[in-house]
Image (cartoon, rainbow, N blue to C red; front, side, top):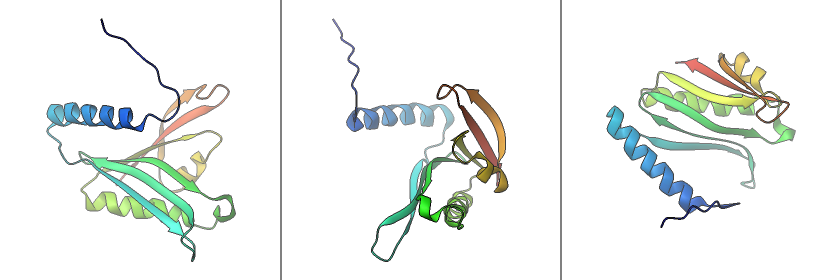
Amino acid sequence: MTTVAIYVGDASDLETFLAERIYEFNAAATGYHDAESFAGSHRNGSGDIEAEITGFTWGGSCFVSYLWVAEAFRGRGVGSELLSAAEVHARGKGCRVVILSSHSFQAPDFYVRRGYQQVAQISDYPVGYDDIVLVKRL
């Protein structure tokens, strides 16, 4: 008999296992075996992170998982600098497109100003708000 268990909180070992299995399947199905994670940060003189971006490249595409800028640094070009660096990295990896999502209460207009186009909108994620999927062709 098999059992199913749902874990609440951090289950990074399970998430890593799952990501590896999904990547193995996707790579076998597409022939793209070039996935690579990336991260970039903006730090102060003490080394504290003031802004950061993470994501991955795979199969000629780039996905930005997270872009965060501390409130004190918003509107000062730090987010644009990180996003530009990720786009340069993606171009260097042969990517043709960057994909990301932003909730309606976050910064979708920031991405539009940076040349991203909205391609999808998911209502009620979370309830009362939208998740907006944006794409930029490189």
